[in-house]
Image (cartoon, rainbow, N blue to C red):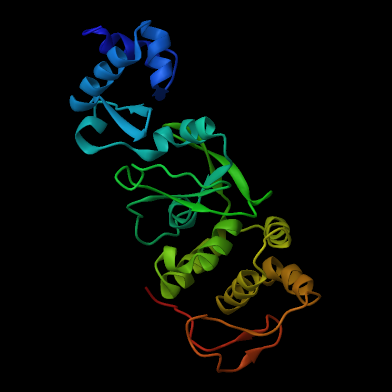
Length: 262
């Protein structure tokens, strides 16, 4: 058993597996749980694997043994193991679409279920629960590590508005939305908004798009649709006083100026 750690890693990698459980290791090594756990602890101490959560481990690539785990490499496998819907979102998604301004230091992931994975912050991953998990606005993106789920530019814009405090604050959200506009598509925007559960975020997005002079054909169908929704005026920035001119099309109280410069 002492030298079986390298055999375990070789067999797992040979079958394309990046994460494994204690049960997986026992199955491959035909050993007792105490013996397998001792072997896993040696691999971890030697910097060859890292713990994702109790009983779940990720194999480190040579460069990761020095610089730490690259979360995107194991994300899809981890989510499949947990059996939950997910997508890379917020500033991590904005970065993918070239609109983050500052590359996020933590991979931001939206999930359909709450999971208490104790090591995630150390591993530079952060989960946000979305009870009304979106049925549209998520696509599969290819990276050097394989495929993972990610929010479209339209859903990303809505989410950074909804999760403003997790997206660098109001001014940063304005700049992210502004830069996402060039990647948006008319039909995708309308469908995504119609299926989004936070109407206030849709109002703010529409207002921002018009203020940032997005192509009228992009937001005009959204403006027409939202006119038929029952809504009261809301402040552009929720943390400031509800005082200012009301933009009637979007029912937005212009209580703060939009950010235009970085």
